[in-house]
Image 1 (cartoon, rainbow, N blue to C red):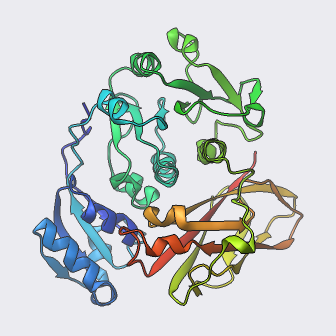
Image 2 (image 1 turned 90 degrees about the vertical axis):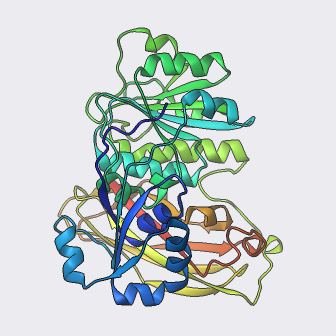
Length: 384
């Protein structure tokens, strides 16, 4: 049974995080604070959400939000007071309700809230059925996880279990294959030609990797090592993306298309570009423009720029996500720089282009046909 580790209410902040929570039928929302500017820009969407939740909107100044939230919180003009999600959902129910293709992610003694949030965000992009954590040695729901997840906390079920080993034993019994990712493994992910359709992906703690004693080793079929050390859990999106590519038949890290597959339309959509960088990578990373308005179905080109601020050569790798997550399957990258090692010489600046188009099928999906904007985000991490 899923149970929150705390019963205390807490504040969510940021557009994607708060709007995702407002749309989650399992999330109890208590109070919504927005600035006048934010409300004016998103009035229709906000009114629809608050009416279904039965809560009122309180218009406030930025100062009120700054006082309510932790110092330095990037609230974007919105904050939402919520209770922890309490799904009546067990790992058995997740397994029983899954179809022939299912992915469950297990985090073994992972404590960093940013890592958990990032993995939630990636899991939402790749339709992971559930994220499982042990009740002990794992943080409960909080604003830090929610912000890093950028709305995915209210999309991917977060299930706490008392015993990871027994959970894995059960999943193996009902037909799942278990793949472990660990820095000491001998097999490289690129050497695995295909993944089973029902799979469990296990990542260990930031400091020690997967625990190596006890019965767990008899359950994990593959210990897969990446070129990047899996001690750095922020790279969890790399194996998840590889599984996604191999499970769907995509070759490489981008979906290759031809002009014949693209049918441009007159309908426009705004694509925002976001650039983040981890603090231990001495680079500057930014997008050329904040957004572009593109025709759906028309191939477009955008540029990011990275600069090495140090006096030593350094290496980085970028991961990406698309929000809202329901739009992800319609965002097609023809070419980009993600999931590849990038090396910059001292003080070197490099242009990093992204070629993409929005699949016209987005206009036929009842969940996405009214979307007016999409955000493409890249985060660069240091390669150790």
